[in-house]
Every structure is written in C-alpha cells, then in structure tokens.
Image 1 (tube, rainbow, N blue to C red):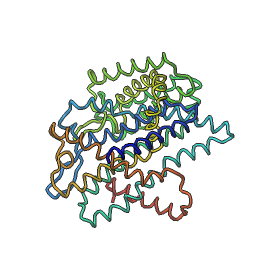
Image 2 (cartoon, helix red, strand yellow; image 1 turned 180 degrees about the vertical axis):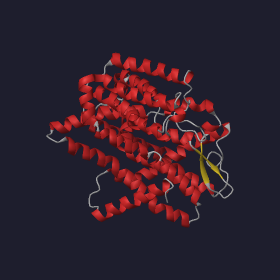
Image 3 (cartoon, rainbow, N blue to C red; image 1 turned 90 degrees about the vertical axis):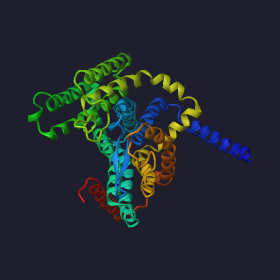
Image 4 (cartoon, helix red, strand yellow; image 1 turned 60 degrees about the horizontal axis):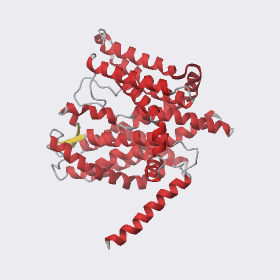
Length: 412
C-alpha cells in the first residue's frame, strides 16, 4: 500500500519539476535566482537556530540566544548572515527589471511603484493579521509578555523590508553612479560607515551621541546593492570580484583581531555592541567578501541549476520570498506558544544554555519548516495584487498594522 502511494507521489513531483523547467524562459538568469534563494533560506534558518526562549515562573516566553552561552557559535552567524548577497542580487535584478520596463516604454516612477507595492502588501498583511490575532490569543490565556515577545519577533525581520524599499527607490541614482565610477561607486559608502564606526568606537566615543550610529543604516545596506547595480551594468568583472573577496576577507579578519569587533553578526542579548543594528564596518567587510565569491561562482552556479531537480525548489523559494520573510517567525511561534502551556519543552521553552539544547533545536527545524509551508499556503496570496479589495478595507489594514507596530515597539 505504501509503495502504491509513493509511485503517484513520485510522478506528481516529477511532473511539477518538469513543468517548472518548461515554463522557465531561456534568458532567465538562474544564478541570480539561486543566490537569492540561498540568502532567503538563510534568514529563517538563522533565526530558528540562533533564537531561543526562556520560560518565567508565570509561564511567559522571553527571547534568549544560544550565543550568550556559546560564543564559539558566532562563526555560524558569518554563514547565516547573507543579507549582503540579498542586496547584491537585488541591485543586479533591479537593473535588469528597470531596463526591461524601459524597453516596453514604461517610466521609472511606474516601475518603482510596482516594486514597492510588491514589498508592502505582504508586510501590511502580516502586521494586520497579527493585530487581530493578539486579542484572540490574550482571551485564550496567552500571557501579555509572551504576546510582546512574539510581536517583537514578528516585526524584527520587517525592518529589512523598509530598508530594501529605500535602496530600491535609489536605483536610478545608483545606475548613474555605476555608469560613472563602476565598482568604485560603492567605495564612498564603505568610507562613510568606517567614519561613523571610528567616531562611535574610537577615542572620542564618550563624546559621541548614541543616535550617531543610525547614520550607518543607509550606506551600510546600500553598499552591496550598489555593487549589484554595478554588476548588472557590467562594470564589475572577475578581477574586481576577486579584489572584493580578498579585500573583504582581510578587512573582516583585521576588524576581529585588531579592532575587537564583536564576532557575532547578529545581536546577542546583554552585549554592549552589535554589528547589525545598525550595520558596522564588519558587516560591509563580510558583504564584500560574499559578493566577490558570488560573482566569481556565478557561471558555475548557473550550470548547476540547469538540472531541473535543483532548479524547481529555487523557483518555489523565489516565488514565496516575501512570505518566507514575513511569516517564518510566526511558524516558530506556532510551536513555542502552545508548548509554553506544557511547561519546559526541550529546544523550545528551555533556556539555550546547553549543548543538548542545540541538538534538540536542530530536530525542531523540520517542524518549523512544515509550519511555515502550511502558513505560507494560506498567506502567499497576499503577495499578489489585492484585486477587489475596497479602499476602506485597505485603510483598515493600515490602521491595524500601525496598532501592531506600536504594540511590538512597546508604545502601546
């Protein structure tokens, strides 16, 4: 009986794989999609592995991280922090997309509006739905601290969408810079971040206001995007890519060994310094090295993804990009919140302070992934245009999203 069930399933999967292959245009840049899928999957993997919970005496969940107890795990964050790759691919893809749009006679403003709507719809959906979910969960007995912990986790990845929207809006200016200076157009952004880091960590650090670090937000994340635009404009070749790889790796090592930057690429609870919020020079060094490696491996990756069995999952991940970003923390919470009522559940509600926790958390990853697939099946439609949605409903969704944001940020 089991064999009889497996045969139709195998045929269905094989048929879907070949259908995706047949529908893929010959001009599709498979390497770009592969790199984007890799960067996308690194986001939930990193959050699920490096984010844990503790359970207080009242049964409420609070955020915790295994990096607080196991500093030697920090190199894992070097691999899982792939936002540099995401911005690099985003810059390259924007060049191609804007070029095709212009060839059809479209304006830059229309192109930009379409890109921003694609980013905004899923964010509005997840925040509005969570705003409606919170009072329901509270009525069911979920403690308020647990709800605030969950809201913080849900809204945490969404800052990235806001930053990405801003750098996307700057695409025309990035194109001009790439046309004039090529790959060197990213150099002033690196210098700006280095200057801010010198001020906030150097001899004058005590006299520098804390808000100064926010000046790194735009140049810090625009750096890899600008490299991607230069790459898309064919102004960043193999020689420059090798320089990025070697120079980025050397700068990364120097910052760790001689300037004592935190080893973790993600925030660690209780740490006095963080590399990611906002990005430090170490983030740009890693992005440079990753970008150089990605450009050098592009052709090899494109050949690899000519195999239909490898290409099909890449397509599925790319089609669900915003769903993955917006809902992966909800998938983890869908397991952790019910578990909090059962008390101490290894790998979910126990403090991430032992090697055993790491092993058990690895076992939980397929559960989180399955939950994300189920949630995504119901929510992926929010990535498509909201046809038939009245202006009142859109305004209501915006109000609910704002209320959720205020709750998550502790303003309500």
